[in-house]
Image (cartoon, rainbow, N blue to C red):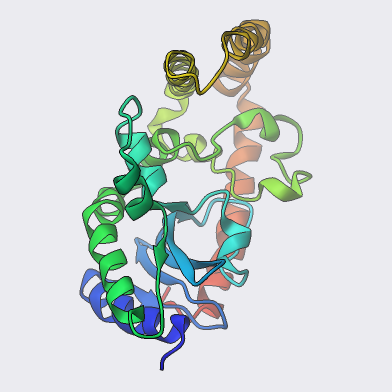
Length: 268
C-alpha cells in the first residue's frame, strides 16, 4: 500500500501539473506555481493524528524576509491555510454546518481508502482554494489576498529594522506596500481589517463564541492604539529616507530568495 506522502504526490501532482504547479526539490512535499519570478502559489498537506490529513496552501512573495519551504508544512502553519480557513474568510458571518466543517477541515483514510480520501480532498481544494490562488497574479492582488485572508501585513515591525529582529515573523509581507501604488492606501487596508475584526467579534458575541467583555476589551485596544497607528501612517507616507531604505531592503530580500528558489529547482 502507498504511503500518504506517495499517494498525495501522485494524485495532487497529476491534477496540479496542468495548472502550472511543480513539486520542489527536497524532502518536503510542496507543489509550487511561480508567477513572474515574484509570487509563489503553494499547496501541500499536513498529517494529522489518527490517520487524517489537512490540505493547506497559500501565497508568498520573494519580498518576505525568507522563504521556508525546506521546513515541514506544520512550521508554516501561520501563513499556509486550510480550505476551512478560506471558506470562513469568504463567508465570515455564516454558521458552518457540522458536516461541512468536517469535510473542509480534515480527511480520514485507511489503507483501503487512501486514494479516494486524497481525491476527495483534491476536489474540495479545486473548488475552494485553487480559484483563490488563481486570482493572485500581481503584487496588488497579493496585498488584497494577504489582507483578506488574515496574513500579517503590519508595518509596525518594519519601522526600526524592517522586522529583521522578529525571527518568528519571517512571513510578514507588509513591505509589499512599498512596492506598489497601494502605499498610500495602507491606512485604509489596516482600518478596514480592524473593522472586519470587530464585526466578527460582535457576531461572535451574538453566537456566544466571544463574551461581551472580550469584544469591549478589543474595542478599547483598537481605540488606545489609534494614535500609534496614525503616527505610522504618517511615517510611511512622508518619511522619504525610510522609504528609500525599504526599497533597498526589498531588493536584498528578493536576491536572497531568488537563490532559495533556485535551490528548490524552480526555473527562475
